[in-house]
Length: 438
Image 1 (cartoon, rainbow, N blue to C red):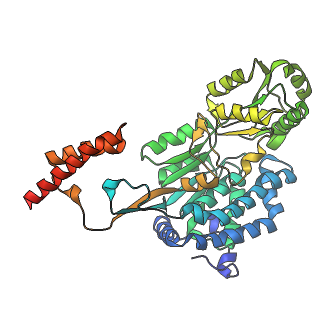
Image 2 (cartoon, one colour; image 1 turned 45 degrees about the vertical axis):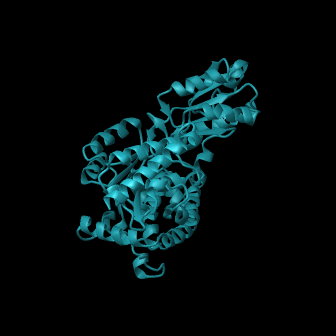
Image 3 (cartoon, rainbow, N blue to C red; image 1 turned 90 degrees about the vertical axis):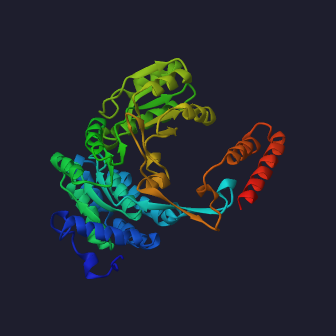
């Protein structure tokens, strides 16, 4: 399916305006069906070439992303380009296993399904609409797009306002790497274009943005019951325990407040300090590189901190700083958020192996990692009966009721041994009834 990397087709620019030539709907659907039937390892050929092109064009990609918020080139290289290349490599190494069919035969099969074999396939939805954010215009929409494509979907990518040039830069590299044109369409970046894209229709929507805009998109998707992943606003808390390395916590908070000019969904928005260290922590954070610093709130203990985090409407992530990783881990396990970091902030969430997503007002569904790749598919189960026994097709009788009641007690009752004589009697009765009928 993929054009070789050295062909003229693979070196072409995207179609004018990022649009697909010809009748869009029919052309995209035909191309997507061919793509779906292409083995996963063959789909990944363009990902491998794309990763190489990302490395060779790293500075120009970073410059495109940096221009959106006037950020330093080095920051965008490490926060967007490098994680994108790593995400490509993760797909190359793991997508075949994650998307492989799962077979279920005799092991664990209920006895009443004797002769049945099952296969759970992962099937692409068809066309996925990716609505990207403005804070990380390269990494986030590109990763979602590549996961959707590797899973066998076609993608319509709607960039955030002012970021279309970033999406086009990624598309050019993807086409140069051999991705067939109809599988990726770059839409306009206005708000009206977002509404039109939803109205146009998609088989699944991946939205990253504010909670308010997410609710607006969900309201439109409700008319068609279109499934979606919503990666929405965060109001993340940093908990500094009494045994924490205060210098480390201050460095981390300063980093989180200045990264991307504060425009990170899991940037620290609330600081909880346990016990007496709140005053010193607040003093050290004053005037943190000019970035606004959230007030430091004193809490009695870790229990009180957990209660405040779990009572919040937003639950994207949280961070804990402590000199005792074991106790910090126990606290992290109690927090009802999508991601928790211990003695670190923000950066670990970019690991391509890790799923990312929020709960409550921060959204639902998962992006990235194995779970994020599976989000781009739905389970398709094929059940095969081997052998000619189909007793369930017959009309049930009184004897059948007695047999299944006895079977339930013998298989699932508290005293299974005492239920066996009743099961044997039910089996003998059923055999006699069957013989008399024949």
